[in-house]
Image 1 (cartoon, rainbow, N blue to C red):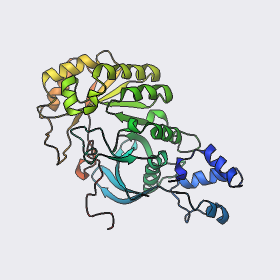
Image 2 (spheres, rainbow, N blue to C red):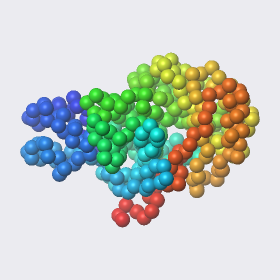
Image 3 (cartoon, rainbow, N blue to C red):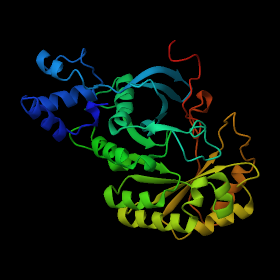
Image 4 (cartoon, rainbow, N blue to C red):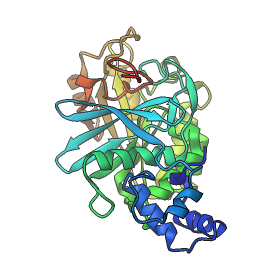
Length: 344
């Protein structure tokens, strides 16, 4: 697929040159793409140039359906190859936060997550990830100068660092002054713990908020919850987190989903404190969100667990899981249509 949203401004300028078109057409094209326009909607480019671009994909993401909840909107996106992914935009006091997907499915196999149930179909390109931002910004009636989305979290379907090159290109595109010009401080990336890629991200693109899906500070227990722990143990993971914090100068967020009888004991809290006490970090406790295929229950000890961590001197909060009423909260996004099918 030849997706125009995969291109930076410089790359579009090179494309214009190869098509014997003036350089300024690249900026016109980029602006049109970021506004969510397809060929028919564009009125700035000459007909001849649009004919030259007929084999290129303008908008790789289409919102097939939106499910409105009490505090969020969940989107079913249709891709050019008829694959489907999900995403969600959450309305906070400070603005809209968009949760984007980076893969069609996931191969990490985390036991509490819906995204991995069907395995990995394929990676998304940088333009397909960016296309989610474009589509939702248009849905919210935003534009380039007055975009409605204030924050981006790479926490949808897929493991972002398992699609490293495309995610890196997306980060470069989304923060570009030629485009939406997002600040790194308004972008979070969540990883299950691919330590080598965390270190690579620290070298290539430090400054975004790094979020670690931890869920247990006990190695044997974490291996049961998250198979990736067998590849990168806790010692290796923590070294990579320290490296990222040093390179970026920013604290790291640890996500900890509380599962009844699995990781919610006093001993688990002590292990979590011991693991994180020398790190510049914050802990987000997450009530387990329902996934019908999983035989897991949310902990009854959430507030006691939080209090224990605070008593131990940890920086910790319980995260409010927006979107659970439309199956769009943490761990619930997947390759699934809630109602009907794509042909409706």
